[in-house]
Length: 82
Image (tube, rainbow, N blue to C red; front, side):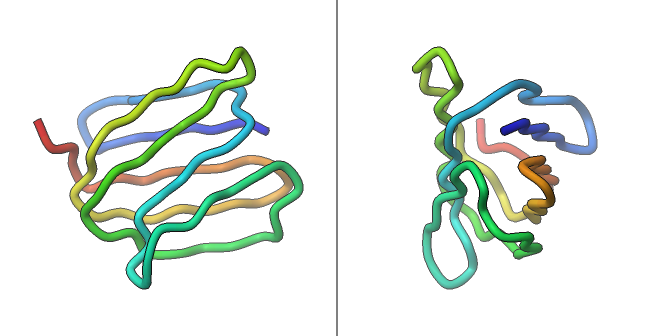
C-alpha cells in the first residue's frame, strides 16, 4: 500500500506502508491493505504509520482529510503540531 502525507508547506511522508491509524472526527480508525475506498475528515490527534520494514512513524496533526483508493492513501493535513 502507498501513502503520501502532505501539509500545504511540505511532504511529510511518501512510501510503502502496511498500516496507518488516523484520528477520524468520530474516533480513531486504521487503514490496512485492501481497504474499501473512503474519504473522511480528520480531527486533531495522532497519526501512526507502520512502513513495510516495520518502522513506526508518529506525528500529531491539526485536522485534515484522508482518501483511500486502490491501496493508495492520501493524507491532506491542515498543519502539524510542533
